Length: 376
Image (cartoon, rainbow, N blue to C red):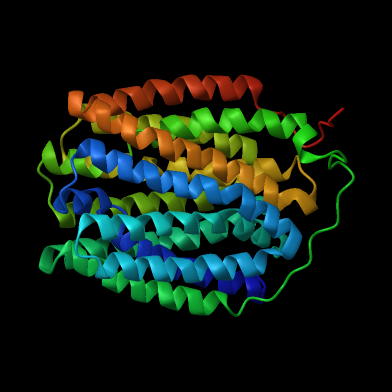
């Protein structure tokens, strides 16, 4: 691993530690500030709007001006947003900070393009999996620390500590060096990305998969608190276990061929839904959160799959399209999940289960088979 990749990896660990402190508790804090399940879903959906709107422009700019300036901007914006959330005293101001934080999702396309360009002798799958694992190592500790501090002090206090970690993360990433774009390989298509039939086939397949994989997630902490009376520290433990699952799956299954690992993610997320819907003991919830790592695995492997079918110089905009697809899923899923939750809390998991099963079958049939396919 070269120095640039080390800096990104350590910076992502610090980011994961900061985000992990509050992400799992965010629906609970929104509820504490006065939001009901539908409004919680709407606010989180709004965060998805911010995420989606930023992705394609960010990916386009990454291919034009380079990935490093966009990474710097996103990291600094994350620190700014974290301090707004930390200092907010009402739902309105907190929501402003949350939406600004959603814009920092624009870092995903240029960051992943940077990682694949800076990977050296590593494969794209390995580089993306290892950096993702570092982020989730931080996400292991974040919920544990957040659950403890939230129980001892307040949920609001978590955002102040998280903001400090974001400042540390931003400082580290400012030291990364510019990397050259990889040369175009012979198997890469010569036509515009908009005429790239295989890539355009991947987009809708990824959308239906990520929509249903994400569907039940936003309101799961509320479900655990309201239906099963779990405390903040217990929910924090679950978040940490979920992050351990992310790391273990990224470093094991994530080392397989991208398509194989991606398809394995579907049954893993189905197991999450079944355990949440059918059982009521903490040990089963812990197992569920571990298997939810299949969702993160799917997102990472979709990027590795995408990289096989686009030119190196179009990696940024291609990843931008992929992250926009994920963003649209995160826009639509939370408010719909909120409506379903008000009708029947456990129904959100059954919808997710059958949706993931159906989308998995569709992906098996229609996903491009190998990087040797050529666009005509």
